[in-house]
Image 1: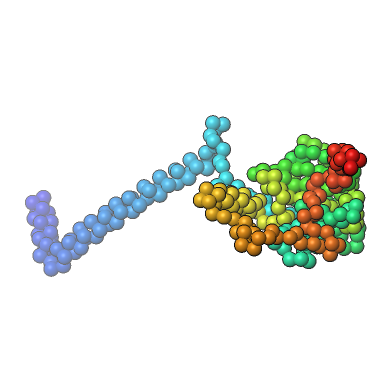
Image 2 (image 1 turned 180 degrees about the horizontal axis):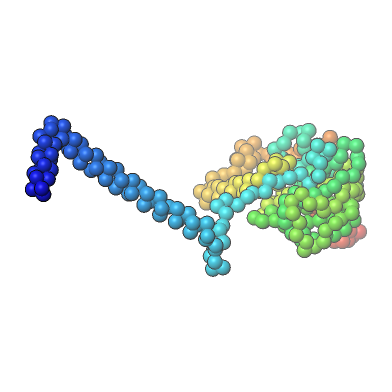
Length: 305
């Protein structure tokens, strides 16, 4: 019986092998298995970098800086914009301009301050409210208060120092709210607008000066400009100095001297409307009362004559 069963099973497989569809089906099955293995292997390679990336993200999320890590430095420092020293710029106007030798006649006349029957060149700007009311005076730049004083002619004065050798001066103040040594932020109130003898024609106002490397500059030209724009003045001044030194070394004559040699005359000083020459206009930074002092030697010579 066993032999009959074995013979029947062998005959069964032989019949299957003899079928035309058997071997094609076998080949397709093997090909499908191989294709499945290849696809699975490719997916496995793609999954490995994703797992590594996830691990890196987890490490980044858990990262906490140690005390020894260096502090991050900003790539570009934020530059402050030079502001008018008033809280409400729309309610203020410049009543006294900065005296500029290159300005037109109208601006030069508005930059002269009359005191004690003499004209003085304004080295700053006078700012007042249209209706003559007082207003808050703020710091044009962040800095340190270096001096607070009361001047008989200029009134209460506040002087502040800033980075890059920049200085600001505020005069004709009332209700001063800062002291020497205070650190003041830009826009912080330092006083209120007031009056003084030197600028009494301006009424209630604030007198403001802006200086770079000790040289007065026109504040009106730099309102709304970054502090770095003041560096161009230093570069221009150094270029002018170098040019003048080269001219002296090369022995080239000055244009004014050449004109004097050709005409045989020297330029006469121009006169203003009151008949005073511009050479008599002095700097308001100097105390006007000092100009009235006379030399004792001159009085002695007049008595001897």
